[in-house]
Image 1 (cartoon, helix red, strand yellow):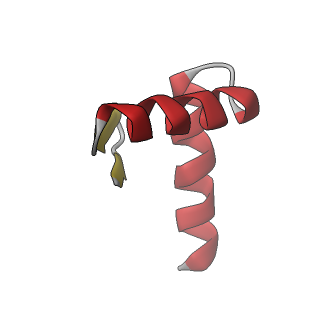
Image 2 (cartoon, rainbow, N blue to C red; image 1 turned 135 degrees about the vertical axis):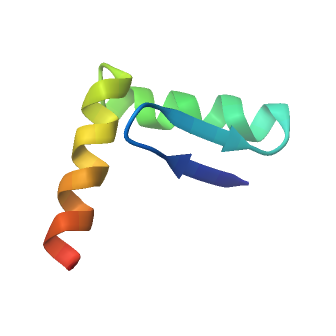
Image 3 (cartoon, one colour; image 1 turned 90 degrees about the horizontal axis):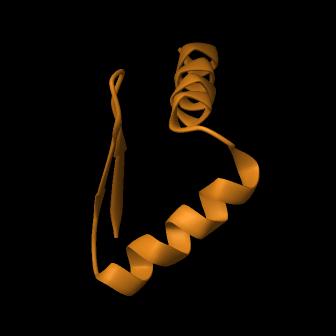
Length: 48
């Protein structure tokens, strides 16, 4: 399973059951996709 988070969205690649499981997992952490993107971008900025 691969997850790519871009500035404008998220791309998930994998089997359907893997994607459903990951969406459910991330849905508990983040209410909106934009929240998910902002969180990932903040982490990327900190690691640089």
